[in-house]
Amino acid sequence: MKHRAFPRTGVAAFLLGGLAVASGAPPEWTVAEAGGQVEARHGDSLVMAWQQQALARPTGGGKFAGSAFFHPLSTPSGFVWTSIQPADHLHHFGLWWPWKFIEVGGHRYNCWEIQEGQGAHRADSVKRLDSGPAKVVWEFKNSVEVRPQGAAPFTAIRETATVTLAMHGADGVALDLILDEQAAAEPVTIVAYRYSGFSWRGPLSWNKTNSQMLTSEGHDRDHANGQPARWVVVTGPTPKGRASVLLMSAAEKPQEKLRVWDGSMSNGMPFVNFNPVVAKSLPLDAAHPEVAKRRYRVIAADRKIDAADAETEWKAWLVR
Image (cartoon, rainbow, N blue to C red; front, side, top):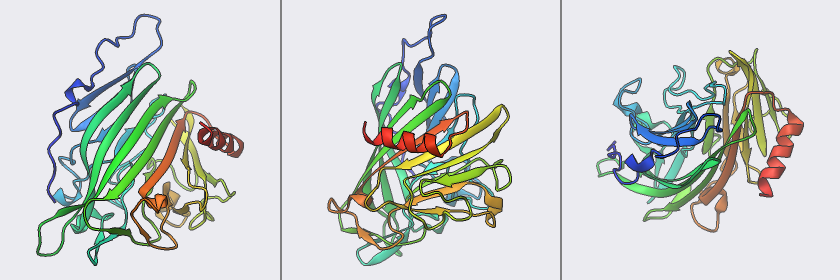
């Protein structure tokens, strides 16, 4: 798979000069490029990193050289709530959203297990749209590249991801994502499968015995798989107490369905996937915003988020 060079324009200038925090002033956001990533810090704390370049030394070799994902993502206390390349799934990358299968020109490509070499979700360029003491907004340009047998690879999907990062109260961070995708040349179909789309691989320290999962429809870890949901919240321990990760989907009619692991899979470590193509394949076009234009919010906080809190957050988000 061809790996694109880190774009020069707009990245070196990401360092938000002049934002030195005066004594006693509240922390502000700074952004810089480092080691192939775009990093966002609130004061001195690293809160977010976006993998803009393909991983230089991935576990498992070059076939796992992924990009276009978030890791690490941290709560305000510094607890990292994402993981990448765990031993059970080397193709899992923090917070990321590849399609499992797409169909182009009568051929099907697996874009999830990138090690198969059929296709992959890749980062192309990045542009900062807004920054200030309260938030940072980016435009990430990404693509889905496929590799036909015996032919040159080509771009099948072009994507614009509009991402906003902000503090959410004194103990939380909110990450908003709008994903806008379109076929690059030939028509594209997103093929139905039990997992596909917006996904989170949680901390490896959380499992079925020390963490809890709950969905908007009242399902726990052992009953949520395959069910519709507007939100999912997972709570577990940290070195400084407890943290929660609340993932929300704006899809309502129909709601997206979930792929999650119950207690019998990987000891119940948190994996959450919002999937609009569980039931049927959908064309990637303007007539099907379920796949062409999706919207998510993730809130990570150094506290327990219960069902009432999660429902309040979801409703407040949608009326913004």
